[in-house]
Length: 123
Image (cartoon, rainbow, N blue to C red; front, top):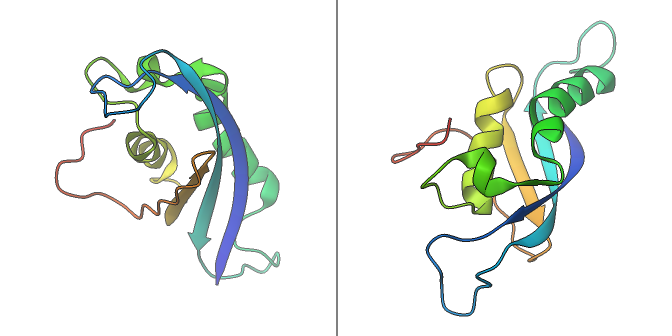
């Protein structure tokens, strides 16, 4: 069974390597991050308690990134894209509970991340 929960975060960023037509100044995006956990229903009747998942996400992600600059969170030289942000989120909570991260940005793009890949570098 797969359990999912959504969280909203808002961040600003400025792309380092500019693509044609992309804003060069800092600008804000609101992201909805969908977390999925594949697991077995416990005797308590759920895979993970909502409040437990909320606490993990809030302390490990929301408090660090909400209303902050993604450039500073990811570190110098890392392109502040939604792809790199999702890798960062995975690194913050995957060792505890995670099976996939599915962000939905205001840009109407969808990305599903389920673990490491060649070239991953976000800690």
